[in-house]
Length: 322
Image (cartoon, rainbow, N blue to C red):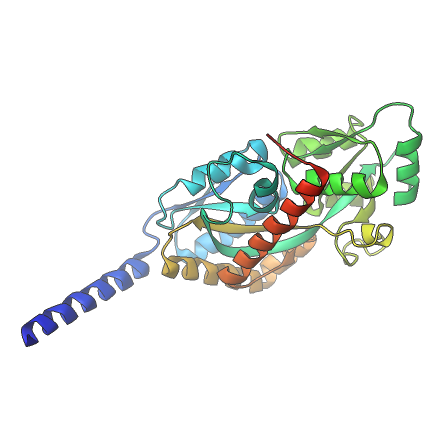
């Protein structure tokens, strides 16, 4: 009996030691962070910034792999089906891990159940932007311009299911304007569509727009957060014209469900340390993305909340992607 008990304890200690050893060794090779969008958008630029800092802290290269398509569905599906060993993660956003659950009825993964949130990077506003040549200077003037137009006017987004898409649909509903959605393959061509007058507007993530606004190539008519953003203090919120309007964009890393908790905790810790560094804070501030350090559990709660909110909106406005 005593021998059996000793053997059981030995096995238990052996397993614990093995687990501790595995964590101590992680990561033993480069890690891949999938970006579910093309180069140049918020997920890509912020993901690359964080990958460099976190990779250095972990002692391994974090390789960025862009897998754009279907508003983040292609990249998300690839990671949902990846081995949950901590070596493949996704830089998700409010579109890929919030909105898609609301507008796609045939996803081959579950936005909530198929992923383990690891660490939130930052949150930012969307911005209602127009070409600098458009003869409007505020939201009311823009709404009047669209309603009085004798031709159909379009708006761009980085793809069906992006936060730009749903933000614009919410705006259309509240302002009662007949804008037509033109989805592009990522934020970069969607921004360029406004700058080249292919479309009249975009309500896109602020980071890709900030330099265009500051250079005078585009005008910011409103931001989508409850409060005005420090980087554009003179730009009103959409809620100032349409009370209750709010959409918040975010970026963060998620792993396949089943990834060991110790690995999740380790990467989360390094993300939070990176977000506390003056260098990263300064660079995020430059693109108006507020650091949002926190626990995996808090990040998971944000994802669940976004999914619930966007599902309600999509049902109310009959917004579908398939």
